[in-house]
Image 1: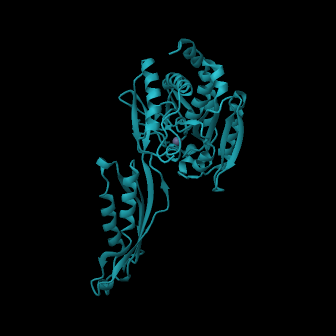
Image 2: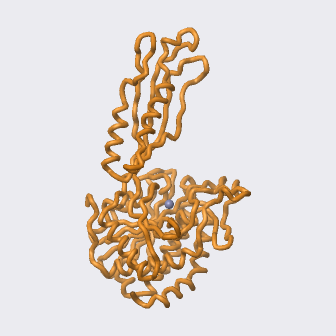
Image 3: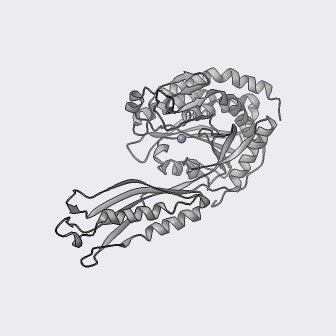
Length: 417
Ligand SMILES: [Zn+2]
C-alpha cells in the first residue's frame, strides 16, 4: 500500500470542485424523456472531462425520443482498457421537480437533489477518481486506455446502450466499473456483485360478453379469469430462489351490466439465476391457450394470450465480479474500511455487460432514497440524498483499487465470453 496520506489530502482538497460540478449537473433536468436536457448534461460532462484528456463522441439512442449516449475516450500508451460506466438520465420530469421543490439542497451532511446519487454523484466520483489516479501514479494513468461511457436512457432499461458499449470492448478490456450509488448495511459499505434480471409480461384474456342479468350463464368473465391468473403467477414468488413476481397494472371490463369480455394485466418478474429466469419464462408462456374459466351454459372457455415485451439479462455471481470485489475488499482492509458484497434487486448497465467483461457496481458515493422526490413535513418521506461524508473515503478506495487492478494481471473471464 503506497503512502495514502498525500492522496487523501489531495482528494479532500478536490471536494469543493467536485461538489461544484455535481451542483451544475443536478441543476440540469435530465429526465429520460427530456432529450434536450440529457444532451445538455452530456455536453457539460464532455467539457469537464476534456481537461483530463478525454475526447467525446455522442451516439444517438435508437429510440428518437431519448437523448445521446456519451463516450469519453482517453487513449492509453498500453492496450489495457478500463471501462467506467455511468448514465446521464434521471427518473424525474421537470414538472415533478418543480411541484415537489426538489432541487440542490445541502442540509448538514446531506445534499438533496435529483440524481445526487442516481447517478450524477457517480459521474462526479468518476471525474474525481480519474484525477486521483493521475495524482497517485501519472505513468499508470497515461498507460491505461480509459473509456467513460454514459447511457442516455438507463432508467428505461433499454438494451441499446449495452449493445454500443459491447462494441467498444477490446480483448484487453480488463473490467467494467459501474458508478451507481452505494448502499450500506449496518454501516458497512457494500459493493454490487450481482443483480436480478427482469422479464416483463402482459396477460390478455378474452372472455365472452353477456347481459349481466338476463344471460349471465352465457358469459365467460374475463376479469375473473384474469384474477385467477394473477393469483397464480404472484404465488410463484420464492425468496429461496431469489424470485419476485409482481403484477403492476390491471384493467378490464366496461360497465356494471355486462359480463366483461376482455381484461389485461402487466407485470414483471426478477431473479438472479438465468436458469430460474428461463423456467419462469416457460411457465408464463404455458399459460397461453384456453383458460380454466368457462361459461356455465355451454362450457365456452376464456382465451389467454401471453406477451413478453422486454427482457434484461440477469447478473449472477461470477468469478470476474468476485475477483474485482476481492481487489476492492483487500484495498479497503488496508485502509481500515470493511466492505461487503451486495446482490441487488434493481437493474443497472452492469446487467448488460457482466457476461462480456468482469463487472462491479456500486462505486458511486453513498446516500439513500434514489427515485424519490417527495418530502413530508414529519420527515417520514425524504427525497434522494447524497451522504457527503461518504465521498472522500470512497474516492480513496476507488483510486487505490483501480491502480491495483491496472497493475495486476487479467481477471477470470466471465461466463459466456
Ligand atoms: Zn442509476
